[in-house]
Length: 547
Image 1 (cartoon, rainbow, N blue to C red):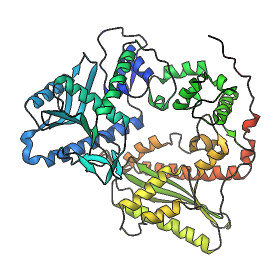
Image 2 (cartoon, one colour):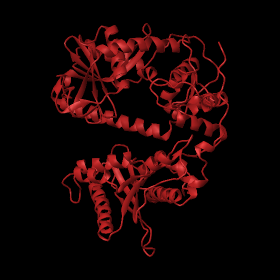
Image 3 (cartoon, rainbow, N blue to C red):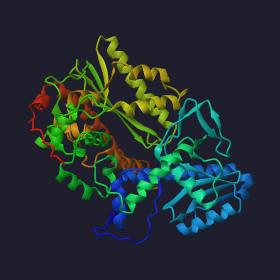
Image 4 (cartoon, rainbow, N blue to C red):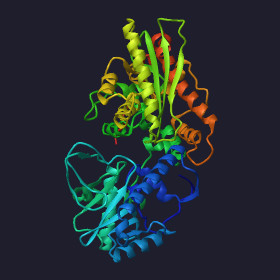
């Protein structure tokens, strides 16, 4: 990330676009092109962690491939160590001219005529040219069939009956960009294709770029027009705004304009524009035709009215409903990137027995992930949870386990059962599926979504304060916990910091207590103080001026 000056740099040289410039916010590209970068600042912690994880993954793949080709290193070239982009570009061209079979860390020379710059993790020689291969820190395939894959140590594309492609537009754009650069160098393989090695490096997914190149060519023309100041852009709030250094400029501009993107997502912003709705005021009083593809605008209109009334939470209906049980267990899981789930925190409440204490019980491994000790902590958690479930039912009591947004918990419940199958105490995938699809597994986020709307979002830390809950640690959050975990297990080579272990346990305990507090507040009448959507002021419809 960078701090940028407020003074345009003026026309100096033709823009050179990397694949990153071809995806995401067009207005960011316009500002990046108009204003020079003048001072680098550290990335947001979550961005820094993702970059670090991606770099580590690339190194592991490089070492694996280097080892696979150890008996023919005369055909392997690693040009990633060049000190400058120009030096790496020259080394890449030299390796291609020398006929290297595999070129790791390839940087293609800048191409001012076409406005391109780019680099690939690897180039593989095929026939008389090269195909680009990229290494990404996300999945490139799923179980299934229909993908075209190749062994990672060679280029032998064939139909794969065990894998299906997990599509990623950014990946195909990058491959098309690199293939065009190879074409301009006269070094592209005859068949337009490229490869992706994802999180699972057991196969290389092969992409036919024939159709992608057509879309890419049109995209490049538009993006070059933006970078040259020939295509106008305007700010609009989207997901990437959270980590963009231009938000300090775009945010106030959008707020001043009451831009509708402040209360609805990017896709709906575009759909509303087709019926002339561009401001929050226009949406709040809208009574016109629906955008194509929408059955109603009830929720967006309520969110707009809430924004104008400065209301942070809205009740959808008079009576708030949430599932309750005699024995309740709140569950919150902590994971570290894709390496594993190191902590399953639980809070047990027996509503039929006031003498039984409300207990926070963590099931944790402090062995740095990935580790087989994760199987031990997960098995202990699962065994305890199923024991409490079985005991409650045997004693004629109702039982429910609660989480907040089950997507993450379900991923690691199923993933742990799969990865550690056969270890002591590990359930089968079928047993996990039976539980998460039963009435005993309740998602409080879904209950909040059924009962409330919020212009600020429905994350636990946004909603639980309405129930009077506060976290002990002002820095508590998913991004901060990643840094705490690194110090808690000495992941950076430093001594283990036991204070960070305490911090993580307290953060996890607060999360499960927040879920409990929110559920009891919803069921106990506290939520009746939240205004109903029907009670919000209804502004007069905005009259659209004739052009």
